[in-house]
Length: 196
Image (tube, rainbow, N blue to C red):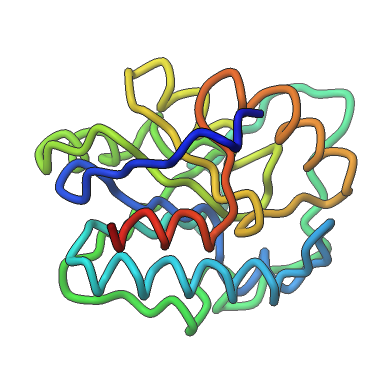
């Protein structure tokens, strides 16, 4: 990771994309940061992006009541949701309340690009760089990052504004995947780059 390289951000070409910071997912435990710590850093980023009049995009996962619009392939291990979901399961956490020009994207799988309007909305706004965070590092964030990379977006990963179910899952993505497809930085460094 080349953290010595000064981070430069073009505000008019950069969007913040936060993955699955919703009530149902943030109610589960995460590592190495707690959901509250991830939300606090995500809130700092959204505040800085709003103040700079930059694009913010909040992504959440949701499906129909019967679940037929979600993926159901045969797997060796099923995703565990912990029982019946409460009605507010997919609502974005209140700390990240949508502003007038923010985008809200609903996905039905891990990644935020396939089957959604995310790519279209970003390209219409001439976005070339995505600052990415959320839960879970190695599922929703990584799937979205891989798709963004393959679509030619530059990526900046807000390492302390994301977490996984296990510390080792988070650390593997941060150390082995993300440096090969983007730049890994802390929230404070990203905010500092917006103010230059």
